[in-house]
Length: 490
Image 1 (cartoon, rainbow, N blue to C red):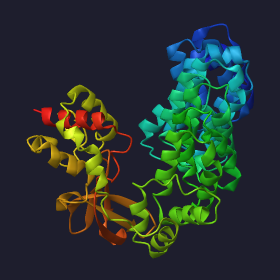
Image 2: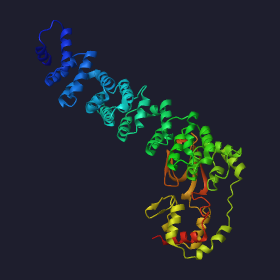
Image 3: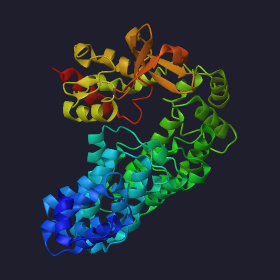
Image 4: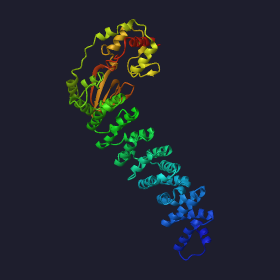
């Protein structure tokens, strides 16, 4: 129908080629109805001239919903060619004016879901990004994501365009980043974040003190799934005390993908420069795997690292390790596990039994030292015994339980250590022991479930989950306040 109408408008022709030539000329016809009909007719043709004609119509009529619909119905497998022609061969101001149409065209590409086409589109977006308005880029990225949804796509690869997506995920504009994040949900992101250039870009952004803190944290979050190697040691600059603690912790988490030996080198080498809070996170990471513990103990044994940072509370975990080499090396450094009770502690704190104490001050001590294992009303974690069941105990009995946690242990609160076949170390009380798995609960309430087939060894330490020495630095008055708080619980 449209061909006959257009033919009538152009007059007689001598050949099909001449007819096609006249049709292409009509892309600049002043009558919008002609351009509208031509957009439909071009769907029957192919070649570069078709793309050029559709491009001309799009730039003239991108604000017209019906013309846009006609163009989109005609692109078929040529959608990527029209997308490239508009994006790379057109002034950025013109593209911004047609941002909505570019989003609709991207939606067609997403619905097709051809990896090579998506990769070309992503590379093109990155190439012209500096000149495009954020709204246009957001429209294109959102269009691709909507197309993926319509086409039922789940995860596709982006051959050769990994760095393009990483760049958009780290864009300075919030809306662009959000749209890229949505799109990345359909992309094989693990492969993207492991590309060498992508990792380098994320590290550069994380170290850039002039970038917004949220941008730097986002880059580190992306690095957590990347496979880092020795070349990424530049991240150690993030571990220094001059950096915000939360940024340094994210840096540590990113570095945990390093092989155990290299991770130990990074932590030991930068330990002295870390803030106290970051040091604790670093030690948690070292204690998470047998290979790291061995590396840590060897560094201490060689004098490369001081033995003092390993607190008295952590040492039993080393000395009672299911790994013989860890236990023997720890014993050579710290001596055998001292299970003798320091009876002088009770005498030192005995006056606290007679003092009235201030429950409000004791509440503050609870929040600082006990909240990770004991729940009081809506505060804390249900790991240790319920304090409401001991509030009527005598003060001397409460004091003994605090000072000597291993004297009388309920079997339900014994500490277990599981070493997986992969060398991961998991500690906590045993909350579930099923036919196929066990579940341990750690301080803070976090739980780890391990399949029995993945358990290398499992050992009951015969120690309470409550560490010895929690009274350290508490005055007699502080202890009296804590006792008063426990007895005030209703």
